[in-house]
Length: 299
Length: 313
Image (cartoon, rainbow over all chains, first blue to last red; front, side):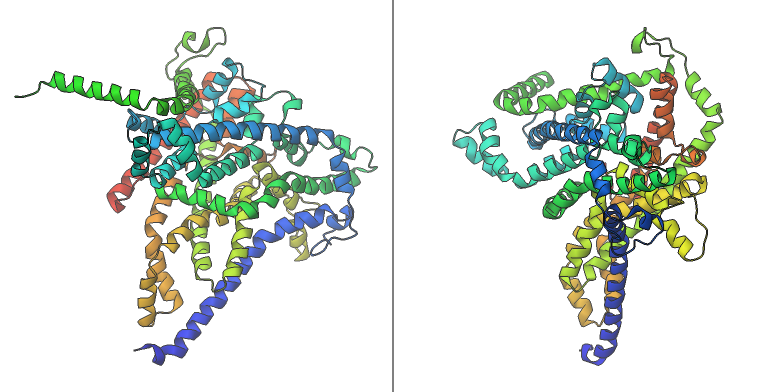
């Protein structure tokens, strides 16, 4: 046995490794956590202190003025309401279509299964692109309706493949054969046996689709023209990036003060818009991770 | 007795019909998705013919006159072409080089961490930025890099440097794009590798321990070879995206001052096609991008199949 002889040298090398491991991961942790934390403290600090770079660890002269101005900004509520609506309806359609189609594609009895899978895979490597899709949405009369944000992305190819893989791996053929002998048809089997066994994949799909609806702005940018239909992300874009703050800072005297107040509002906006996800995420983390892993099996 | 080919074929069709009748609900399940794919994924391919036409709204897609390769010729001969290619490739190649290895290193470090509680804390934190929307991400970039009040410039000034107007300088576009990409995606990207590491046999580690291998040696000789297949697959997937720089972030990060570096093919297509209604021209540019992308995926897939035996299709 070599071990005892090298014991000391070994543990020293291992200890050095562990120390380095802790240091590197702590750096990674701080690099990710600090910007997020800074947004929080900057959103409740005196804007002058933020402007002068004095807000580093704790909020300085705590104030809720930024939030007060945010909550009196009507467009934000309209955006929030629209996004909630689009997310609810969109996710419901996404999940029902993806789960049923994914299940059907997982069944060996399906005639034409290979052709359909090839078609699905083809859309992953080649697509019509922005302009043909834009013309299609216009010619279908979906332009400037909420359906333009929901129907063009009704099924995600990747999620469809993830679902199919899940069903192939978790629903054994024997189970269906047994159910068939008991006189259970395909619909009954799907509703009474498959769905109850699939709560994890349904949760994964709901989360993946809901997050992408919540965060998306691309379809809204291209397909919506009236501001009353804008989702949250487009409202945010106007404030954070295009910098249209007029209503919220008009009463502030000087331009410099307006800019500082604008920054305060922006930090608060980031919190208000990301809060639902960031609060829910730690509890749902396990489902997200699960979803990535089911996808990986196929990859 | 030999069955004739015709009877066989008839038998096959008969079987299929029977199978469809027996399992008809499955086709009902599929119907909405098939309609969706035909309408929103395949029908736009028909619209691609506009790349070779001169689109006129009154004539529609089918009725507009053919112009051959005129749109492509126009695109290749504009001064924009070289710049767009350069910008698009620059953003994607740098993103790929810097964002690819980091999740692997992060996963290796997390996997060897002795404290499970600390591991969990780090994981939960580094995954979080994945859920931040592109709009908020770019909003954060603008706030942090603001020349008058941004945190990053406060740090630079704290070290005695001069504030940099990051969003106004074309040279800073790619670094800002890549760094924010690293910040947002490294944690999430490590999940796959952590899953692969969980599959590395513990017996290998035990045997190496008996032979007196230290942790670094075990990571190098056991962990890394163990996840090599995953690394290769991820490399193929990523290489296929080389020309495919996302529209969303680049478009938001554009300012009138950095446009020289930040105009990429996708944003150009949007401006020409959607904003300026040069439908045929923009379709041609988009088609060019799609074709280059597809060829890249197929090449990388082919190389990987002949070199490593693992491929996507």
